[in-house]
Image 1 (spheres, rainbow, N blue to C red):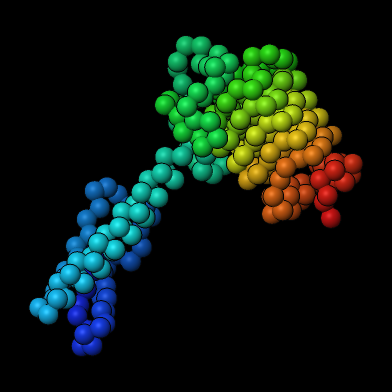
Image 2 (tube, rainbow, N blue to C red):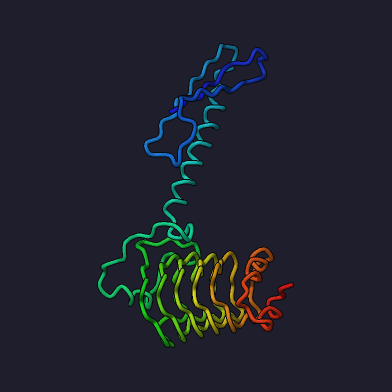
Length: 238
């Protein structure tokens, strides 16, 4: 691991930084524990306090970067190609959707993963309505004809899931990955779709009435060729 040296500049008001690295120039990700050696030198006249302040700033930046990396790596929904955890062996794990994520709400934090992969909720009209499925793993699950109105599904991973004819009225679907999902005939009425992605998803006959979506997200959504002309008018695709 390289070291960072902090050296006093000939100008008493300046500090220069020198970086000394070993032969390895590139690495993929930090491994804990990460050790950074910082060498400081100061000479009297009150400069010790100044060096201490700069050391604290560098330390806080380093810790902040490490914390950001750790949170991102731990997030259940980072990218479609990420490696998912093994399928839960918890008994009645599919029924956990009827209770939902009681502490996560919209931020996707949970006490234990909500693993609903391969579960079948076809035509469920009462058990899922208004539930919080934040950060849920629902890839390859079936929600065909189900009532998911008013659900909070932020940061969920729904790649390859089936939502044919699903009612998402008044739902919050913030940052959901719908890659390769079948959403034919789904109803997004007054639904929040901010940050959600639909790469290679089937959006044929989807109803986008009063959908709440950001401009950039809308431009990405409009590139999906399965959206009907009527739905494009509803969305305002150009």
